[in-house]
Length: 189
Image (cartoon, rainbow, N blue to C red):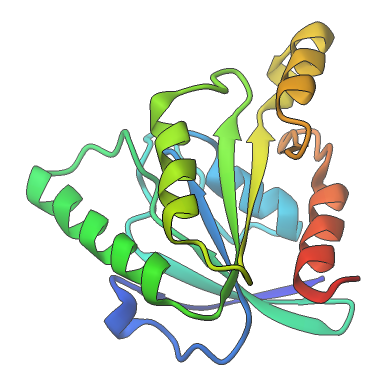
């Protein structure tokens, strides 16, 4: 897999031309999105931080995997970012517009913390995506931080969310399965 950073944009108006299939990555501010990106790409392409909400722009990465290209879109985290209310409102407007109007998004990946699997904020995001998702788009749930669970807790989670994938960014468990699933969804491979 080859990955290269393309650009960052504050809104859809400044985004790159939608020439490739896109995969949009969503997650709460402290779900481990940057760590997931680094584990997924096997490179340090995203800054990790102890302060949630560091990603404030829409970041575009070109991914080439097994000869096929797509654009991975890293969206700002939602929830805990310590910014002004006007800034949060502007983010919300920009994200809403981007997610609904970006016709070449084929896959929404929603990262959820395995330790807190049923937070309202995450359930609301799933509901929101499903409210406008087209027939040619899919929503994939990936639970992060599974290394922090006991085996019995993980088993219960897998039973409750049989369609989800489960990863440990630190131990890189489940990452290859995520890559296969993305390829399967995008290309039927």
